[in-house]
Length: 470
Image 1: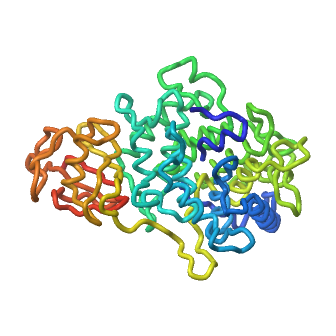
Image 2: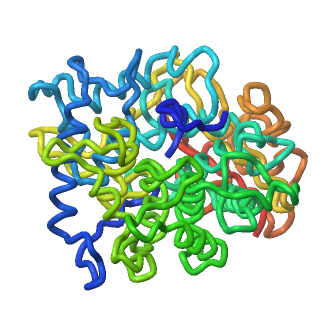
Image 3: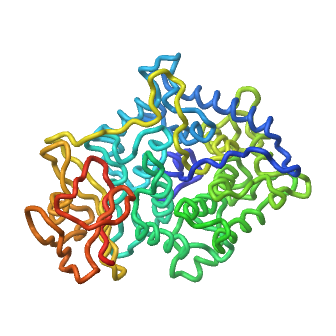
């Protein structure tokens, strides 16, 4: 499902890493000073705190402002420290985790961007997205949308935004120790699709253009260019890469001299500017550098701050507006604070609060999901979400693979395992047998690949990668 320019766009999915690139000592040509940025952040955080409902929520019936969590994290405020009236029992992180753990979340007809949104904001809030609860693994939820017929796409390929935000979520929401949890083969597949959908003008839109010369030659938009370049950088692509440089040049070419705004397809507005700046931030490109300073000495950050109410802290959507927009305020604050589309959670100041919360073990008898990739070493990558019901607080690789033969989404991830029971080395998978030094190896949560044994321990939320090779 694509985004529109209404608030619904953010409710569906945006916007990783992307650790926040904090704008520290700025060069002499930067026009927004560190003091101005600090004031903007302080006021912006105060405004976002005012959006919290009395029950502590930012998301739910009639309210969908959980993207505030990515902005809070970028601005250095821990989500667990955000509580209505100081009532820590209703802190925003706990309330959001409870919502994500609800069996009926996100809806009866979910789309992949629902889970990507959840992943990016859970991570920023200090909730391990793979271990929200015994039954909720957001990483596995995303894997369920892998397109077997078009590897590298997540969700219907025509809705390219689902693949962009898969890259943002899977690349940006790292483990609690900061390790990339997904295997490189999956990241490479995503990067291939991101590159294939870049338009000739250097940017992107929400729609798939791969293989369509006419579509590739159409105009890009600011928003998706910011998100897609951030997705490349969240996937490990350096900012010197040709495609990232082309995206940077696209944004630079859209600068409005008088204000520092980007000239968006939707008109000059703070949300588009916020997405464009977030893309630059995620790639380590200073949006106040000389190349993003106009002849009128204005930068994209200047434009954002100029459209913020002071000291109230909210940002307008358009300069002509007379009231702040919650969605634009989230987009703008995240960008001004130096963030991409998610950031690692800050250390809380609330006594007793931890930086992270996570389910620590399976609950016997409670259905669970795990994320699994299978790479046969010949370019045939499969990804799936494996459903099973554990009988103990941990399980084994063999049991997960056995479950995958009948309970994987999409199906076909695992068709056969040898040996089919017991313990010992996995000698064949999907009919491909070990051969000399080329054997099946396993990685768990980004660990180094090692010999795959049926008894390899697996616990709640583990992201499993299997690879055949030396």
